[in-house]
Image (cartoon, rainbow, N blue to C red):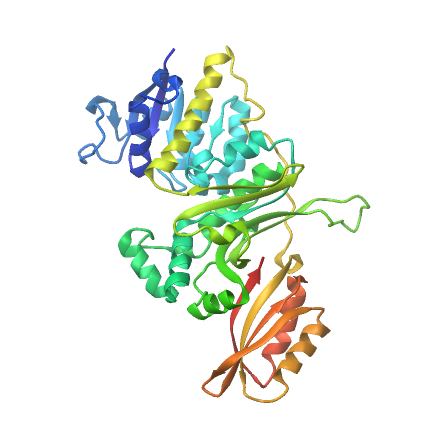
Length: 438
């Protein structure tokens, strides 16, 4: 039995995927039953390292997704369009879809999965989060008996590389970003990475799987790393922390709506730079590596770690998804979406507004060198229900005192109210940094 693959895109990941499919030696024997039937590319004349016969290449991507001979469409062109439309066309034509497209799934997942469920086909997306790190299928299968309490992680290699370099070298963000762009670790337009948008796409997908509900991507709070300074990284080090861009999805089990007595689950969904205690497993995830930390009942804590991008790791996840679909096609005479492979949930998760989120904060203040400033800060914080874990005057800078505050757990709305009062103090020159603490 041979299963025919229609491959959309022959870039870095597409070429890596094709290479695995063409070189099945020493891999799972089911690979020998997969055939690359057609490949969609932008240009037929572009030189390529991968050896594919000219007749299977085409610039007409629609002809691939509607080809009755194709069993599985593999979408690796990225972006929102035409990727979304091509996936929907493939589904309408009865094709199973494998994709690495986190942006299209995060934004249009409800539409895509509804269409797939109605048509009775699979949409597989292991490569959309964490590159080659197996985390999508474990959430669907290995951990499906657990009540997941939280998923958080470092899911963007570019920002982790930048923050690691800043930590090791004491360099500022802009300098490291420029170097990362020269080395190819950051895009010419780094917005999606450094502003947290890529990580927000990924945590939306992980949360949907972990908590069994759809996520409205626009409800995911995203804050990037542009404001993280070398000073903050140095102060974090002194306080026993490292700074990482974390993507966090957490169940609020103590939330109850005013109209009911039963506990109603609500999620926190957020991406932001975070002070992580040095003893936490995520603190030692450096460079371009990713890690996803999952906590559930009864399993406790597990962490998935590895390279989060690149041709090899991402292609590994793509081909694993293709094999999963092929295995079902091979063993079922009439494929019906497997409940542990498909995404069938319909309801939308309730998302907590950021002002209700409870977390710890790190804040750095520049103040006039005048007596009583620390006392005034403490009074305002206390009046707003903010308990302080530590208040340290770091030193002096041009006749200005630098004060670093770390809070205990506090509702973000209360903390913001306190900051609004503090900004009006005559002694406050500026508040250069506000970061959350794990």
